[in-house]
Figure 1 (cartoon, rainbow, N blue to C red):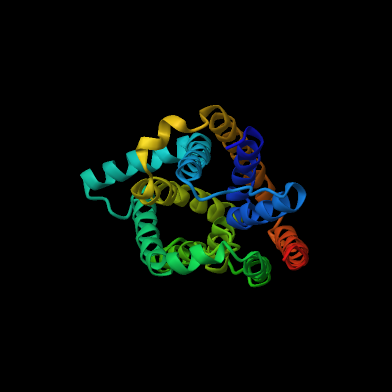
Figure 2 (figure 1 turned 45 degrees about the vertical axis):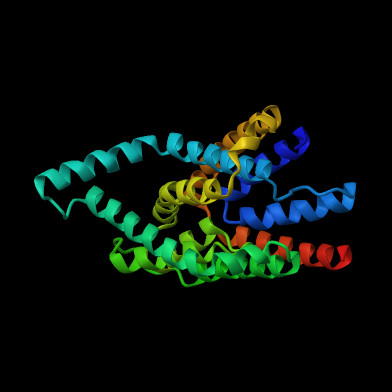
Length: 277
């Protein structure tokens, strides 16, 4: 793995993981453009790449934890306090339960579609079309924005399904979960906060448990850790800044501009993909 590749991949991960524009689509698109410009493969499927993918996802996870540290502390302490006092109507307790429900539903959905989704990463054209769909979901969520309601079990299940479907490259995890929250009566800021906190358990599961089962640890000593460190730093810095920007953005603006971006990017990459064949 080269340093430039690691830095680009880390930055793409950090920027596109938390903005509703699909990190998987941007990794695929970056690979296509990189191959066109250099003639080489941007991303391979060896053990070094698997290990690096784990690290940059954990770096973006760290960005979420640091940014929402106070929220997480309040949720966790409130959960155990409510559990101890048997106060199951407490907001913190219910929010933690909703996160558990969403995560469980996501795991079920992702389990049944992950093999199909993995194959789609090799088809930039399909990924481009799915990115167009992400734009459509974002746009519709703003058009059908309903009166604000309290979070409930039904919404947590629907958000879990949306997050599970985001296993398909081109479907933005943050985009689909936030849009689903908005369509079910959550404000943009509340939906985004829930989406980001919800990403913590799923990033841990997706980035550690599944990939580590495929990783050959005997090869770790041969990895380019200098390049990986740079990639992880890029993922953390860009991820943290994007979360900060996005949360402030949602206080004043809606998601339509991201819908337009997904449509423009999707159309451009359809053109690039067809001409790269």
